[in-house]
Image (cartoon, rainbow, N blue to C red; front, side, top):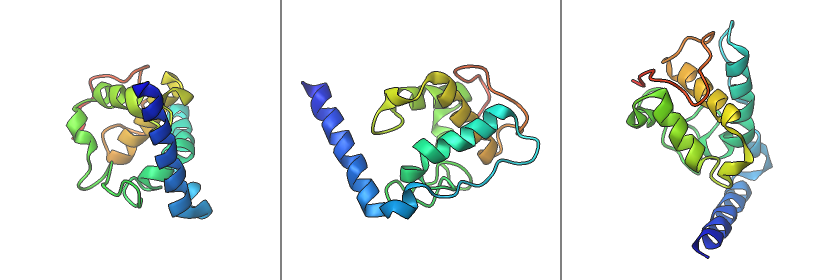
Length: 137
């Protein structure tokens, strides 16, 4: 029962966020990855726009719902320590409205895109499935 109540609350919060942000904010323009980015990073940018930007902002820091920066100056992702730690968090809890709606390969691509945006990985370096021990600084 608790799971269904949580799922209903999560769905309601996501719907409220979409209403607050409006249609234009639902598909913000995510900055393109740097030239020479791997196909995984390119996929991660597309998936970030589809599944993450609504709550976290197109630039990882400009959202009304969760305005704390997730990459760049003052970011929150360093608390996960490594690419694998960040992946494990994303795997369990993101996207907020339904963590099961995207698979682990997609979540790995999103993590790769985030770490490229944060300067932890070179854009041409793909992550292995589930991330690795790349330190997040």
